[in-house]
Image 1 (tube, rainbow, N blue to C red):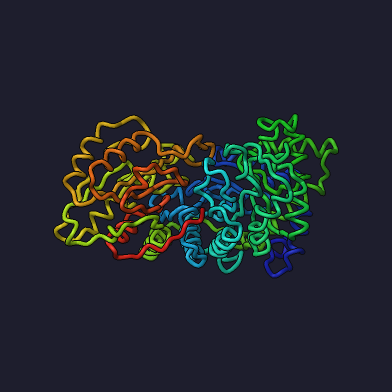
Image 2: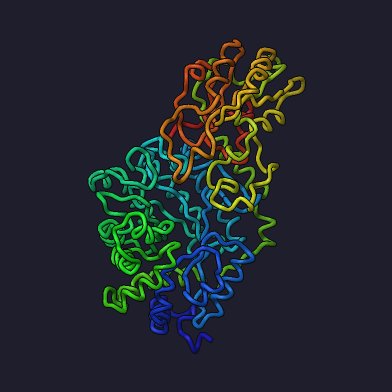
Length: 562
């Protein structure tokens, strides 16, 4: 086969293979390589549009898609991508680590490198080649719903932690079968949107971009990150997907970026539908290609639009060749023509959520937790705590403890379910497991975190009165975090304020544990607590780590990154 088709011969130089392959491709096949599609009706899509990549696809569908692509005229392999944001986020029972904001409080690049490597090890067993992580956005307006996805507010820290995760994800090289492509996103200035409103206008100058927002991305580009992703926002009325200066002049020419630039979800379509800077998909295809985008995520209309643009002379085939060449070069460098990297579920049963990864997850949670306040009540003394109350809407809430970008948080359909409850150690679980002999741990939820459900407050107060101390676990929930989930306030929501006020009036020593996607405004009833611990979204082992800290088995070492 390789004697007939030089592009299939791994002993030839990459450029020779690449030139041979491009010379054999039709315009339709080239345009297809620029498409990343979702999993729906993938068999017809592969036959009709020749896409270069799919996302949100898992075996057996992903294996079938890989095979169909290999059976096509030229057998060009697929890239399979997924939002593996803080672990193998959407694979049921996989290891879910603390969120980026939480792990950034460790200030430990080596820890994050190990977390990314463990994630890659799990992800690759399920036939995924590419993660849309890490996020290099700066935390700016705390009302923004995606604060929890960031490493905080300092450009230098962001660059160091991102570089470590990129190294961990990509492993020993692009041809490492246990490594995955990392993505530096969102390029750039996405988090500067006015009023914290997601995906809107970012009031930002080029000077501010270069001073604060671009340095982490430059570090990622020069450090070998092979994919970048654009943001949803506009700057000075220009959508990031149409920002030729940013995408071509800075990223590709100034920094010498040799990887591929992928748009965020339907960004090319947004040029027509939401941002309304292009009249048709034909014009949007022209803008996207000329601005420097290589792969167009989930805008199937790009295919016909690009072909129409070439037919009318608005784009040349050479302009299509440029991004196609980048995508094919990446696939060749990854060795996908020799090993298309199907799933290996037998290996996955040994690797996913293995003991070593659970231990690493616990260590990540330990290093992420920040002690904000302590009047001496911590650590607990076994002889002084005979009866411990555990109260609050987040004390036994596994979904909100995991945080956004995990099963059950909305990115996948509800029928996919959530991670099995037994995979997550909540704060209540951790305290019950680690309590010394003779200490009774009693739980009352007290109230909800959002609605006006207050029926349990009286019971929580009664419990606190009869206990030596009360661990009160409050914060926010999934509905206040994530894409298009920006908030108008940072105050505690629902009846949590009333719960805290009435618990304070009991005189019982209160230890407040915060489980939250982003910083919150703390009322006096929280500020007056004997101790306060910030956990953000500490992942599957977060409750175990918090319990270890409360009982003095681990010294809290986290420092705020925001």
